[in-house]
Image 1 (cartoon, one colour):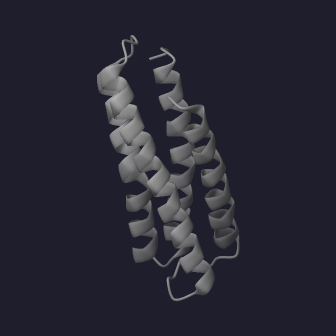
Image 2 (image 1 turned 60 degrees about the vertical axis):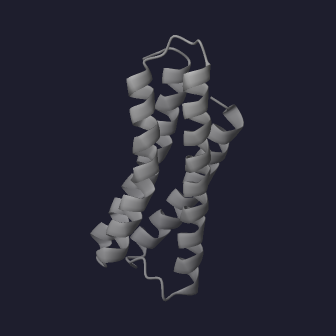
Length: 126
């Protein structure tokens, strides 16, 4: 995989994760009526665009490379990454309790862990 895209996803998930952790500690739900929460939403959306770019690059690389990787696992991780942030954001916007914000934090942390695992699979450690 491309290290720059993975590094960008680590950085973006760190920024979003810290932002959501602050919201969780201050016990404030994610509401799109607040200016700061709209900025958070757009940051999450930008992260999802980078995830989409990684998925496209990953599928193209998977089918054009002669690397010995487990293609089913690699493809499942790429698809799972695409679904992770939209589901976490949808849940967080629907659940206005502290739990909804915690779900978004778990989704962002899971994103970073899945990107790491995707890099390991690409390197041949499946």
